[in-house]
Amino acid sequence: MDFVTMLQEDRNISDLLYDVCDVEILSECKPPQDEGGHLTYNLSGKTFAKARSGSEYILLEDGSIGYWGSEGECGRIADNLEEFFELMINCPYWLDYICEEEYQDREELSEFAKEIFEEHEENAQEDEFDLRGAQQELANSLGIEIQADVAEILMRFYHCAKREPRFVQTYTENDGSIHSSTGSLFDR
Image (cartoon, rainbow, N blue to C red; front, side, top):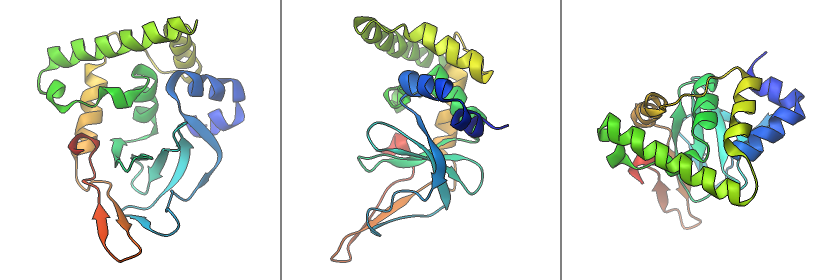
C-alpha cells in the first residue's frame, strides 16, 4: 500500500499529517488548479494533496512531486512520494527552508535547518502543541525515520528543484499576455 492510499484510509494519521505538516491528502486525485482555464503546466499530473492556503501537491507523470503555490510559485520538490513524505515530516513548514544561500555550505544548511525547526517548535509550544512528539508519532505511523541532521534531505530537495525538465506553470491573461514561472522554487 502506498503512502497516499494509507493516508486516505486512515483519518487519524491523515489528520496528524495536516496538523504537523499542513498537508491534507485528498480523498481522490484531481486535475491540478487551472484558474478557470488560464493556467497550464509543462508536465501533466494529478493533485493528491493540498495545503491550507490552497496550494497543491501534484504527482507528476514521471513520478516526481510538483508544487503549485497559491501565490504563483511552481516547481518540483521531490523525486518520488517517499522523498516527499520524508521532506514533509522532517522539515514541517518546508517553504521556510527555501533560502538558496544556505544550501552552498552543508554546515550552514544544518544550522539553518535547526534554527527553523526550533522556531516552529517554540511557536507550537505557545499553542500547547508538541510538534516534536507529533512529528515522531507521524514518522512512526508512516515508517519514516526522523533525521537529527536534515541537510541530506534538504540537499535532495534542492537538487530536485533545480533539475531539468523543471515543472513550469504558464498563466495566460484574458488579453493573451503570458506569464511563466521559472520552474524552481529557489528562483523566485
